[in-house]
Structures are given as structure tokens and as C-alpha cells.
Image (cartoon, rainbow over all chains, first blue to last red; front, side, top):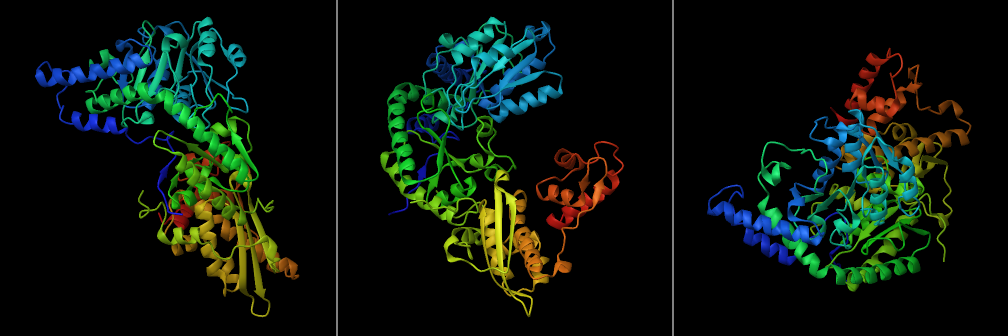
Length: 396
Length: 202
């Protein structure tokens, strides 16, 4: 069997869509500052605003509700940091509503920011997840108080793919007059997202998870909700995010969104089919496994699975040697000593988290890729288990 | 994608791909000493088994198995080659640094993964002494209480350093050392500096 190079780590990042690449190459000549009044500037401005319109339309927002930022992480940092601003402009804190509610399965950029804000006197409470990674609406209801300023719950989880019922969670939050933010970095472009139907106040997007360039994200901000910029000192983005626009990134982002609008639906069906083959193949060929995350409310291309007795970093690196790129929830791969906080929050045993891998399929993956992966994976697991202290029983 | 620049050194990669001296379940390996250390909850566990020439006190053969990452696999594989022919005493005093050197270097945050192999080896040597009625030779992991309030030993400080603690604050985060009366701070700082030097040459 010939060695192949297969990328199955699309929740980490994605390759550029060929159309996006073309658009970016074209945009490299557009060097004008969008704020300049002359022709060069106007040309850049036109392209930036065209991208904004595409992004806004895709999530059913108005263009002036979309703020381009350096990343999804920056957007998440910006939203949460509103809570620590004592300025009268940020009316939510002036009312004494500055407590944050978030969840144990958020991305580190939400968790670390929350931790930092806690140190600055902001109260933060964390909702747990159930064994499938779902956030319980009733638990949110109970946790909300009159002091709650904002609730931040991710729409789709990057590690296990579980999708939350954001509409219900936002509605519960609004009943207590708090703001609702969702980190939709893994959701936008994979599942339909409509900010009006969901009725969220803030929503985070990123380009590089949907075949766009890195270093460009966006934040949707509903009209009339309190806001406080994280980066000040410029009128760009209507004073909400200073700094000369990353025109090339924004143009790439716009094209990526345009392609999503065309391809998302069909691709979703394809990925679901591929994941089914993958899941059944793993179940059939490998013993003592456990799938993590929600069986149906899950991103189409995301599959998280634990192998008893096999450590995740070893699995990742043996697969890498065979040309297959995936990721793991093991501590060793992260450089920390703790395994995935998401998997632990779903209540699985630490050893199952250490022995987990995440396969995230994307638009360029084919049935052949999945079949190759299914040929390699059992061999890798057997090799590791043969030298494992844990998995001593090789069942037939 | 390019496989040329791998995460770790070529030697580590080679040992990871072809680990030596794996203990197989079905071969009924007759060892003279066996050590088990680590915990799968923490993500790594190691078994090390040795055969000993009882007249010469020399390790003639060894086998191992692990639940661990690439660094743990490769470093134990190379360790298992290194100890064959060593006296028990020589083998006992091998340090993670010796193993890392043999591998051509390890990233700092990976050193603690490689510690498990020589820890299991020392446990196996002690097990050999116990089985052969040489209790007097058993070398204890010498632990001395440094922080009386929080009950923290020098051994735990060394371990915290291997796991990444470089500052007093980071050490406190891991061990809670000196968080009550703080009298042990000076000694702790001396030990901290010493262990960083010992393991990371800094």
C-alpha cells in the first residue's frame, strides 16, 4: 500500500480553498489603506466592505454589525473583557451586572480570559457538560442571577463536535436581562447560523477553520448592546477595533464565506457519510474503544474516539509517520500535564482522555482517504497495545 | 507533508518506530527483578524487568513495556540498550539526563516523560535486592522534608522541576510549598536552582 499524505485535522485549521487562494493572490496588489481617501484607499475600502457584506449576509446580520478582528480568540477576549470595564459607556457594568457565566468546555481563549477577569474582581461561574458534551438549559436557568452580565457558550465544540441549543440558551439568558455570546468558530460554515433566529448578542467567527486565511476573525455585535473595544486608538471598524485593516485577510475571509454558502450543504452530507464509514470501520476493526461526544448533535466531520491502553501522542505520531494528520486529547501532545479539559468535563476517565484522538474531516477528504486511515489505524493501535502496560488482553 | 524535520531527534524517531526489548505477554519472561511505576490516570505507566548475573552483579538482559508517549517509548527503549552489561550500581545511578543525551536531546517539557523509564529501572533493581535477601542494599528514594507546614519533600521539589516548574511561584502552584509560614523559602530556592541546574544545565 502506497504511503499517502492525508490531512484530517480540519478543526485545528484548514487548507485554503483554491478559489480563496486565487482571490488572495489577486488581492496582494491591493495595498492601499482602506482609510485613505485617494483611489488606492477607495479600492481597498470597496473590497473590505464587499467582504463584510458577504460575511454579514451569511449569518443574516447587517454589515455594520460585523467587526473584523485578528482572530476568533481576539473576538472572544473582546466580548468577555467588556465585563471588566467600569466606564459608563459600557452600560452593563454600570448597572452592576458584571458576572460571567460560561462553560467548562470552552476554548482556552474564553477560559483563560475568564480566569484573568476573576483576578480583576469579576465573578465567573462555570456550567458543566453532560457525558455527551451538552450544556443543560435548566442548569443555566439556575445559575443566572440579577448580577449576571453575560453568558458565553460555544456553539460547536472543537474537540468533540457537540452542538449546543444556542437559541434556547440565549432565550433563557435574555429572560434575566443578561447578554448572550456564542463562540461559533467551529460552527459557522459547517452548520446554518442565523444570528436573528438565534437571537444572540455577540457571535465569534474565524476564517481559517473554513478554508480561509489565518489571522482574521470577526465578531458580530447586535445593535444597541454595550461594547468596549479591546484595541483602541483608531476609527477603524467604527471605532470598535483599532488598527489598519488586514485587507488581504478580510478579502480571503469574504471569499471563504462565499464558497461556504455554495458548498456547505453538500459537503456536510459528504462528511457525514465519510464519518459513518470511519466510525463503523473503527468499531469493526478495533476492540475496546469509546466514542466521545454526541452521536447526532455533532459537527458532520468531527469524530473523537478513545482507545484503551493506547496513549494519544503515540497514536498521533505513529499515524504521522504513515502520513495521516489527526490530533489528540492526551496531555503529552499539549505540552501540559493534564489531558483535554473538554473530555474530562464530559466525565470520562483521565486514561480515556489520554488515549483519545480527534479526527476532523474536511472538504478535500475522500472515501479513499478514510479507507487508507482505516487500514493504518488498527495496525498502529495493535503496535502500541503490544507494548502497553494497560491493554494486555488482545481479544479475538 | 515533510517528514524530514520531525518533532524530535532522528534517534528518538528511530527508537520510537522500532522500540527495543519490549516485554511480551506470551513469552513468559523470567526476570530477577521487576519494577512498576506511574499511573495511567496521569497518562503514563512503566514496567521494567531485569535479568541479573548474580555473581558479577551485572544486568545481562532487560525488558520493558509502557503506557506512554513517544518520548517515554524512545527513552526507555534506549535505556534498555544502555543498561545491558552495566553493574546494578551503575544502572541505578543513570539519570534522565544521561538518557536524554543518548537520544540527542529532548525538549524540556518532555524530560518528565523520560523520567519514568529509569524510575522503573531503579524499582526493578530494588526488587532484585529484596527477592535475594539483600534488603540492606535497597536504596530508598531519599526524601527529606523541606516544608513542614505543607509536608513537601525535596523529592517532590525535584519532581516539580522535571515537570516544568522553574520559579518559586510555579513550584508553589504545584506543591503548595511555603504557602503557610514561609520559613522554608530560602532552602526551597536553593534546591530549586540546584535541580534546574542538575536536569537542565541552566
